[in-house]
Length: 179
Image 1: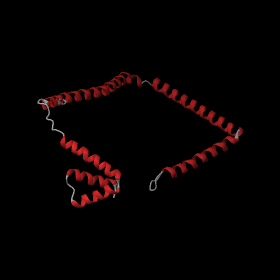
Image 2: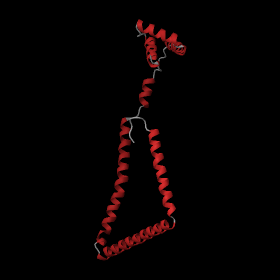
Image 3: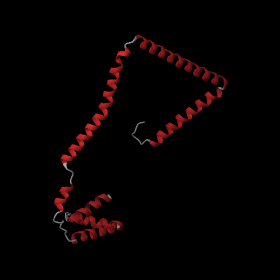
Image 4: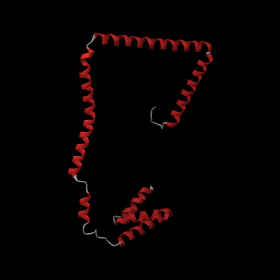
């Protein structure tokens, strides 16, 4: 029998709900396991202490003070509404400011010179990105042709990482789980 079942028998015995067959089973477990017998004695001592303790009546104004300390629903509702309005305002005010600024500058966006300058700036930025990317690819290709062992080391390290990653997954994952 599991220890939990024995503890259940102990609790039932303390509550006075244990049948005669349960008492016999509990006593056999307590004889077989001295550690449980010691815990049973401690539980009985605590139970006796609790039952012999005098009942303490609450102070006369306990209920009134406790109810007075409870949060005021009206105040809590007002606080929630104010917090909600503050959060709503903090989101709407910046949005309203952006809309106002957009409306102020919208007439200037129709000008053909603005569209032309934006197009030129975008195409120059695209050409710059193209030159940088071509330089990076060219430099990497030159490095690989001058140092071919680097590719070998990279492939070797990638293989080692993949191998040990698989070993780690096999060791860590429990049966029945999938990666």
